[in-house]
Amino acid sequence: MALRKILTEGNPTLNKVCRPVTVFDDRIATLIDDMKETVIHANGVGLAAPQVGVLRRVVVVDLGDEIVELVNPRILEQEGEQDGLEGCLSVPDRFGLVKRPERVKLEAQDRHGDWFEYEGEGLIARCFCHELEHLDGHLYTERAYRMLTEEEYEELMRQNEEESE
Image (cartoon, rainbow, N blue to C red; front, side, top):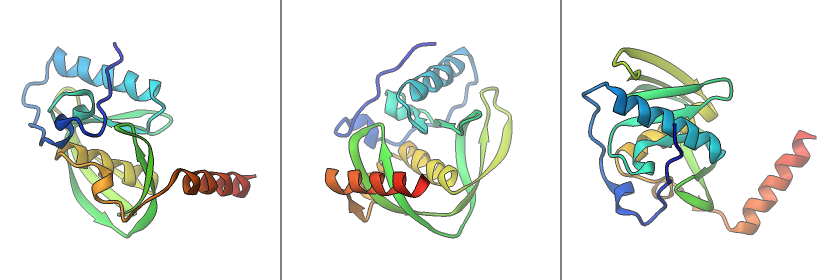
């Protein structure tokens, strides 16, 4: 496994649509392993292949107790609405407010090509939507209805800390 360089906003690769994975071989397994190591090292929640310069439909999402590997993912169902803060490893030190579905059900293939379904709520649903948008060449900043200033973000983090004490 190896750490991969995370591309940042302004890199044209982030605005391209990814191609489906059709061959499930050691190259895809290595990409997935590298992405898992990279997202952990970067303290991220999710990472999509275009963020590391690979235009394939591959995403990893860190659920805390496991990292879900999603190849060729697509959303089957979504319901409800949540409003919340988002950031992105490709948009460092910037945060915005984005509306997302509260619950998402998706299907994807694993690293061997076998199909499965996965459901997520709250932060997991938010992350699924965020990462899948990367596969179509979009950043959350396009969807954010308001970007926060550094001061607003710090105040929000301070309030959250106080509430959790």
